[in-house]
Each structure stands twice: as C-alpha cells, then as structure tokens.
Image 1 (cartoon, rainbow, N blue to C red):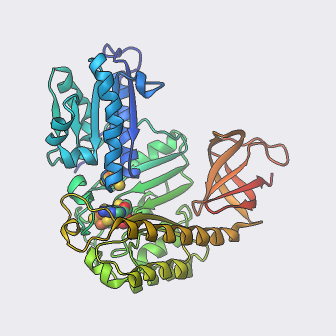
Image 2: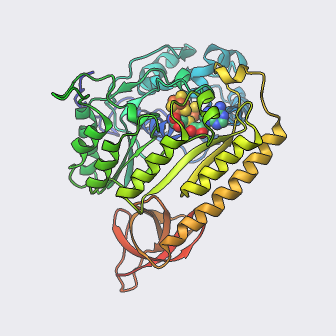
Length: 466
Ligand code: SAH
Ligand code: SF4
Ligand code: F3S
C-alpha cells in the first residue's frame, strides 16, 4: 500500500455542493467504530453537511453499529424504529446503517428495514462520499464486499481537539471461537509507518497532545508488510512503529490498544519503559482464568503466560495500570472454572476490567455448541465478577491518594464548568479545578500537576499544586 498525499480540501462555504442539509451520527461499539465515525463525519462535512443539533431534525442519519453481543446489535433496531417513522413523513431523510451489524446482515437489513438508503460495512467507511452519490442517483446501496481500505485522504472530524485515535491496523486474523470481529472487519491490513507518522505529525501541528494507536489485535501490526532485519526478525513490528513515531514534535503522550497476550513481547514491554511518551497503561484482555476454557476459546496462550506478561510489565514499570476484558459463562464453563477467573482478577489486581456474559454470535463456532449456559447463571456470575472488579479497582486506586499526578486536561467537565477533566498517564479519569491554587488558569491541552485528594472506584479528584 502506498502513501496517498493529502488532497487539498474544498474550502467551506464556496463549494457548489455546500447545501446538503444536516447530519447526525450515533456510534455504538468500540474505539475502532468511534474512529470510523470521526472519518465519516469528516467526509460529510467536506461534502457540505452540517452537524444537526438533534437526531430528530437531521436530514441524514447514520448509525455506526456494533455486533459484538446480541444486546449491542438489538440497540440499532430500536433506534431505527424512530427514524423509519420519520422517513414515512419526510421522504428526503437519508438513512444509513454502517459498521459491524451492516457487514453481518448486508442485504438482509434492507429486507428487514426497506426504508434504508445505504448499508455499508466498516471496510467502506472511507468510501462514504462515493456511496452517497449512488444514493443520490436514486439507488438503494449495499456495500459489504471485501475491500482494500484506501488510505484516508479526508480530514476526520474529531470529537476531541486534544486526544486522537490513529488506526494502525484494520481487521483481525485470529479465530477466537466466540468472536464476530474477523467476519465483520475482514483480514488484517496494516497502514504503512510513513502514513501513520504523517497523520500523527499533522495532528501535532493542529495542537493534538495525545494519540492512541488502534487495532483489534494491535500486536499483529506489520505482519502483512514486507521487510526482515539482518537478524531475521520482522522489520515492521508494533515495537518498531512505536520507536518510529515517538519523536513526533508536540505529541506528549502515546497509547495503544488492544493487545493480545499471544503476541505481546518482552521487546514491546522494554520499549514502553524506554520511550518517555509511552503511557504506562496496558489493555490486555485475558477473557478467562481457566486454561481449558482459553483453549476452547482459541486464544493461543495459557493463564500462566498471561501472568508472566503482567509481572514483566510491573518489573519494569511498577506503577503501570493493567486493564482487561473478561467473558463469563462461556459454553460449558463450570463454577470452578469461573472461580479461576475471579482468582486471576484478585491475583493480578487489575485497574479496570470490561466484563461481559457470553453471547452466542452468528457465524461463530461456539454459538453452535450444545453446552450453552442458562441466562440465570450468566447474570449471577456477571454480578459476582463486577462486584469483585469494583472492589479491586478501588483498592488499586488508593495508591493515588495524596500523590501528585501528571494529568493531561482534555475538556471542561460538562457537569461542572469550573472543573477540567483529564487522565493520568495510567489512564485514570481525574477531575480538578480549572483555576489553580496559586491563581493559574488551566485549559484543555495543558499538562497539569494534580495532588489527588479523593479516590473513587473509577475516578479521582484533586487540586492543582500551581
Ligand atoms: N480484540 C480484542 C477485543 C475484541 S472485542 C481481543 O482480542 O481481546 C471486545 C471484547 O468483547 C472482547 O475482549 C470480549 O471480552 C468481548 N466479546 C467478544 N465476543 C463476545 C461474545 N460473543 N460474548 C461476550 N463478549 C464478547
Ligand atoms: Fe475477536 Fe479474538 Fe480478534 Fe480479539 S483477537 S477481535 S477477540 S477474534
Ligand atoms: Fe463492535 Fe465491531 Fe468494534 S463488533 S466491538 S464495533 S469491531
């Protein structure tokens, strides 16, 4: 894949196509979807659409959907209900379903909701303008075929002006037996390091301070790119990429997600401890504390390996925060196996864990297995797990009490305009007054020293020391 030079954008207000009406995007799902939505919003604005003030007024409504669990998928149908009703009275309304449910359902979505104008999978996000032109020519469009994702030549319309997502690898080649992602996001496709660096440099020029490199399995970065070192090692690994982008002037913090324990290397851990902008937060899902379940999930590691990764991180970065994803009530999971998950959570002491009860998904092997667990077991295990996660997170948070932390101010607290909110390097949400104790005024984008005086399970509050 070659780097495509940035095309000059049409100047707003002069373009003849600048009378398109208003748009509304609702995003479900993960950071990948959020990043896609920001790119699609950028495309719409370049086409002349303006952001609507409410969903029910918009001339174009786009739902960027998630299919990871059944409840995520069902949400879009209830949202669509309202819009279908509107479309019957305002036929000019354009209705679009993008993202993972669109990819999974394709044509079926049109049959179920004939009012839709466009159904587009995640690999087509950068093609929104072309697809909309087809809609304007009177077609009903389904774009779900496998597609090489072209380098994004538009400017994303980003929600934050301080922190930005940067895709580094699309798709996933793993075959976890419960997971819908490979079938909806397609094969892995890495962007070149030059294209990534160019995007980060241009973000820095526009005043961004933090970037999060994104991939469903970010450790796979570069596998599909050429290049071998003289020692026979792949040249373009995630670790190499981190060294390559680290010097971007103006960027203060770099994060990455999501890591896969199967590929997480010691070399990567060393790089994170050496590179000053790399934040000490690692999101490494472990899914289950039981080796037999891990094997049935097709995860390709044992819980012992996972624990070794966590202790290597803490050896080099003792204060690092570690978060994870966990699934409870996977088919056949016994009480004892579930308790192994609880033990791992206690033993490692996670800062945060995203938890979910297993949900059988279309086109995944484990959905067909006969040993599915009943709903009441799912609910009961999830409850117990969440209680433990909260207790441990709160305990972990106590270490911040009275400490001075560097916080990157991201925005004014929407619930209290006298406060700013931001995150510590370890990704803890932190609130503090925008006027400092010695009269200094802080604004989003500032790196602020905050003395922590209040600790909750998932957030902190403090006062500035200057
Ligand atoms: N690529 C990441 C996570 C992808 S999806 C990884 O490999 O870990 C985000 C999380 O959703 C997963 O970590 C998993 O915990 C959860 N998840 C995925 N499929 C699920 C399913 N069928 N039921 C319940 N949770 C699921
Ligand atoms: Fe899904 Fe596994 Fe890929 Fe993560 S690594 S996106 S859980 S298939
Ligand atoms: Fe959901 Fe698709 Fe992300 S299924 S979790 S939005 S990759």
